[in-house]
Length: 351
Image: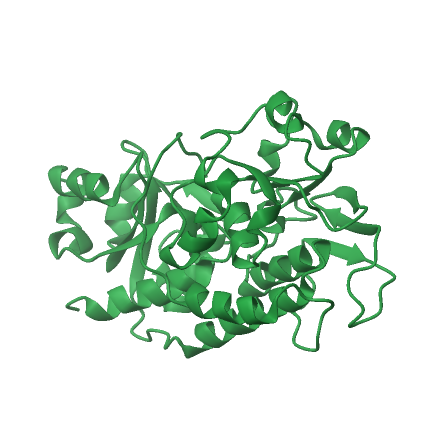
């Protein structure tokens, strides 16, 4: 999802990560998967000679976004790009492995604040945009963990083949894979949980990953899905042309779990350019507003209410807005929190 550099974004207080991090803290770094591990993601696959319970066996080879990547040992020096990757490592208790973080979409949630404060590279990011390869290599990483494939190009942090030749492994969030062969279609919570498991395997922290997945599954199962058949528009950004959540990405996955029918669900993409005419015709019951510093929920409300055409929409007229912080709108450890928070907001609306 396109964005501009930012420094902060208001964030909803999450619930699941508090519980999950407590479990992780007790469990410590894991030595191997258990019977409750998440199923393998369709976006990537891992191979290892290690037996269950014996910890990760290295070298570990992964098929990741149409690229074969090999990790020779549990990474100790990691550059994370995007909030989703940084927060993944913090949630797994691996913040001490981060030597550089960049292109963060906003502050971490309250539940990860202490972990972030103990990670200097997160407290003081390397860059508010995609870092250049020179800056990345200067940190001598053994792994670059990117939220988007586009982060790993010659004009960005470095292309994957070149980094591999220099001894730097790369890993892209599988939910962000773009080719039809590797992109989750549609993205599901099993895909999100599979990434947690795969990252746990990469870092020889499978027990911590299994505990985090189990906690998130329990919380997700505790949400009562709204059954009123309410429709929603996921409004991410844009003025003249709104950019909205489409039918196969994280917004659709989250809205499905909440019980909202996406008015742009027929668009076979993760996000899409929409039109105000389409939105007005659909007349959604509620509007989900992505809250970001460069395009806040308040700015979106002002835009909707000041335009005579959009002001006639039922959701605008009745003030039926739900908000989600930008970092929770992309696949990662905050998606379950987004479901809980949006469900609570929905229940609080006068419908």
